[in-house]
Length: 271
Ligand code: HEM
Image (tube, rainbow, N blue to C red; front, top):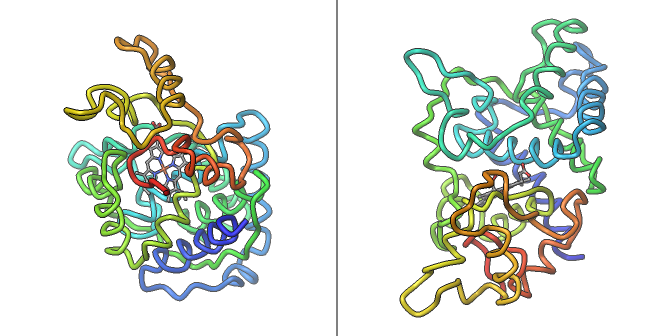
């Protein structure tokens, strides 16, 4: 329960702390200029989720990846050009998906209130909506973010890697004004979604000179993962859900962590 509370507070923190690129954010930002903005975005998110239950996890991760590079400025949405490889095409982002949901909301908003609502605010609102749709907490989204025009694939190297150790991750979060506690709480975003084998297979075989698998993984869990991710692996879509209730925003991720079960990536080892 405690973690759930911290987790919600810190998704708020993500919004408040790393969203700010100098702009003053306000929950009533569009009250006069586009009062229907949140309804339009909510509708787009709901429609998409009805047809594809993977949408909530995808949007939540997209929001994190947007915010971590250059702040929450929608730079993750920009396409590459002949002279610039954009964030979207950086290695950690090629597995991002569901951009069409944000595009759909933006197109509808352009019809209702042209040139008013930033894409950065659309992602932030959509991320809140997917958490709520998945049974998580609700909050009032602060708005008024400006869209960035710079998007560089090489900067995505600063996104936390599944191979990073705890101190590297804490340092990476601290460079964005987030504490170790924020890091643990935000990692609770992994209560939703799925990971491909490629993201965690380094923990399963030839892990170290003394251990074939990472000894911090529950051995039974590691054995299960090995069979899901055989070598050679011909199924590029093979992988593992990030917790046992992967479409519900709950505490299950943290509960599994203490048993060495749920943490597919190196970052958090509890106990
Ligand atoms: C703490 C450092 C983090 C690391 C190292 C990390 C790493 C990863 C990796 C490797 C994947 C699997 C990608 C794949 O194989 O397709 C993933 C998935 C995911 N991450 Fe993170 N992540 C971190 C933090 C976060 C945060 C802060 C959030 C949101 C609050 C988040 C939300 C998600 C979600 C929702 C998915 C599932 C995506 C899907 O099912 O499409 N992650 N993460």
